[in-house]
Length: 560
Image (cartoon, rainbow, N blue to C red; front, side):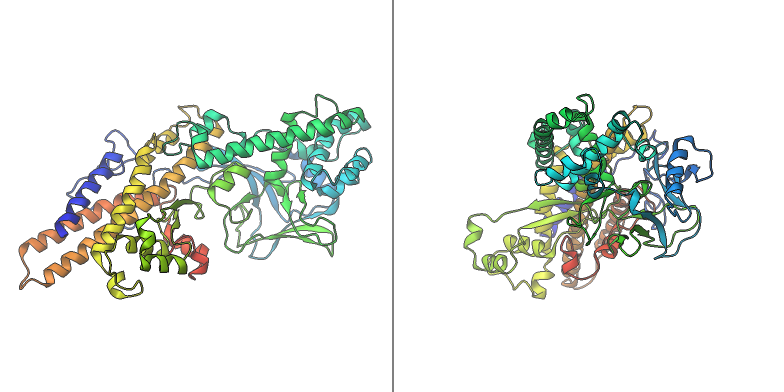
């Protein structure tokens, strides 16, 4: 058995090198030349390949009294309506990749956890309520409220305010300065071209429709287009005949653009005094606050006592730091689908994996009893730290165990190295097949992102490659976890075999030296993936910190 394990381990190491995860390029100045004469990995060494030490560095700060023409009128609007920004200012900062930029809000004064960051009065809330109160189109929107959702009502109101109000009423919208700061294009799944969607690289898919994720996105895009067309066909002629909308304004392009603005930038809060308390609210200035994942949930509310929307600090922010809110605990797929961006170290990232029972396994009493007791055991979610659900692993062990098997909760079952090796090997085959079906390797994608300027990549393409890179990290990290589990099984088996021997041999010392060398390769390569964006990243620690230590809150992965 030990010999078979070693043969399998050697084969897997060859697979790792063939896949590129252990190879280094001699002409790449950012890579280290690996030699066996020195340690390959040190716990405090930096192995990040895409880390930008200037990430979040302020390139341009636009405070209220700063001369930034593009935001001067917006600040004037806030001042006229008594918006208290509490020292927040618009800033352009350096992005995840060197040379890229993004916009957000920073605080110019230190704020403690729980301090108020922003307060916006009701008169600046762009909402379903304000749409119904519009003197020009409010009557129609109120009459059509049973056919139009609050979201679509808000979209039509924004289209009117953005494109038609000045023509119809002779005065511009009070929100014009805000509308001028809004994005005109998005990188959401429903807005990507088919060529861009194809670059998301679903394993084995030759066209977007072959991939479950992309097929879902295509279906959503098809439904969205049909829904938009139905609304424009049904209500467009009425709105145009009213004289409040022109055919050049009430177009599919404008409608989807504004819908994206509402979906990605509006807030949803409890407003118990209204009929529809969860209707979206678009807030000037507040819409520029970016997202980060926090386990405690959102940090904003509607304060009915003073009729204002309030945002609070979810942690301490020093002067000059960017402030954040949480859009909710969203995985990488949802962030791309709705908001059009990717968080490189999003700990909620996971890939669904199901291994159903074979027909002959359905007749085994121990397996049937275990699945009855644990109905979710046939599925798991591959996570960014590489964890797999313990119920799933135990079922895989039962499937690999020849009857009669020891009880699942027994030490003999949990500590059997041969059984652990068989399960890890089987899962590595599944993960390895997925990896090999991808057109490019993880490290090829890294090189593409490093040279985004030379390749003249669009923002959409950068987002797409960052997305597929994150999916590959999940596969690679899971593969490495399984590989290390195999290594541990071999070590346990070797120790058991050595313990049965009358005396230790020099071969065992050589064996341990070889395993130490293997460990150096393993940790070097695994940490290149784990610390890809951040040299101090501890994915397992971040995962446990986010989900907590209880079994229920860690349904998507527990340590083995």
